[in-house]
Image (cartoon, rainbow, N blue to C red; front, side, top):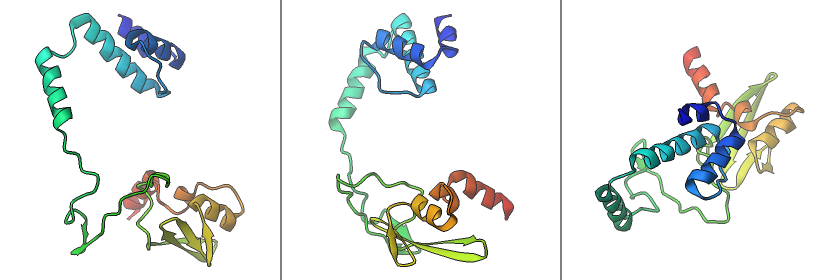
Length: 166
């Protein structure tokens, strides 16, 4: 019954309930995620959580974890050629998986013009000028506010539409 009430609860109520059942604050503002976490915790408190054996095994796995930071050398292969894996330095912001690898040329038709943009390690280049984002290029070209990913067709929705149009 309590979980059903939470299903319709506001974000503020879910955050308060999270604080109550986990005895800590949450930074999360994703309503569905909070609902699932709180519902799981309420169920675990009411019916018992993981067994002692399962908890021990999870701790063993966590201690034993041999996590890779860089992919194996033969992991990234495209058209028979190996692509070098590069360790990202901590000062750079995380790369967006939708942006192609550096060296890729993005092409876009805009009002009878062909727009070419080169993807760089630290941004983008268009007509000899360096830009930090695709949005800055889209705004410079169109004169209006555009989402750069959408302008250059790099959003998931745009890709799906293009696939279905073919």
